[in-house]
Image (cartoon, rainbow, N blue to C red; front, side, top):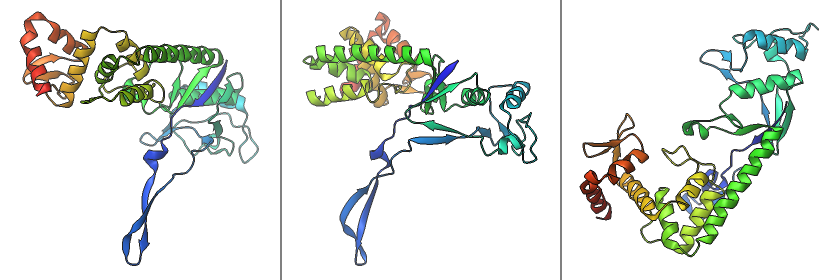
Length: 301
C-alpha cells in the first residue's frame, strides 16, 4: 500500500515575531521594529520516537513483528554483520544507532510504500506517534492541536481532498448567498463563540471567512466539530436555534453559566447538563422558561 505524508501544521509568523528596540546612548527607545522569525523548514528529519520515562521506543508493532521487519531491512553493524533485531527497551542497540535510521519528510509531501521494509518501518513509527494523524482515524479534539502531519493512503488522500473541496464550496456558497443578511451572519458568528456588541459588516464577513478558510480545521472549545463543519450546520439552522446558541456562548463568556471540574454546566447551583446541547434542551423546556428569561436579562445587563 502506498501512502503520502503531508505537513499540515500551519506556521504563524506574526505570533513568533519579536519586538526589539535600538539602544541610543544609555537609554532604550527611539526606533522600534519587529524581527521576523526564520522561514519554516521545507524538509524535516524524523527519527523513531522514544518515551524517555519508559526508556523505550514507541512503535505500532510487537517486538516479534519489529524484529522481522528489521531483518528484512538488512542494516549492517560496525562489524559487518546483518542486524536482525531492535530491542525496544535498548536505545543503544546497533539498529537504533545506525547512521541511516532517519527519514526526510518534505513539506510538499513524502510518498512511502509499505512493500519496502524500511518504509514499512516508518509507517509503523508514524502510527504510534501522536504528531501524525492517519486519514479516516477519529481523533479527540484535545489531541488535534498536537497533529503536525497527515498520513493518507494514496486513494484516500484524493478522496479526502475532494471531500474537503466540496465542504469548502458549500461553506463559501452559504457565506456569499447571505452576505447581505448581517443579522444571520452575526448570529452564526456569536453562536461560534465570537462575542460582538456592535457588528460591522466587513468585520463579520472577514471573521467568518477566516473560520472557513485558514481556521477551518480548528475545533471550537468544547466542540467535536471543526469550524467549517460548525459553520455549515449553523448557517442551515433556524434563527431561534442560532439565538439560543449565541446566548449560551455569551453567558459562558460572562460566567453567568459555569463549568465545574467534572465537566458539568451550572447556572448558580442549578445543574444544566454535561454539554452545550444539554443546556439548549434544558432552556427550551417550557418548565424552564423563567430560567431562560433570567439568563437573557443577565446577559443583556
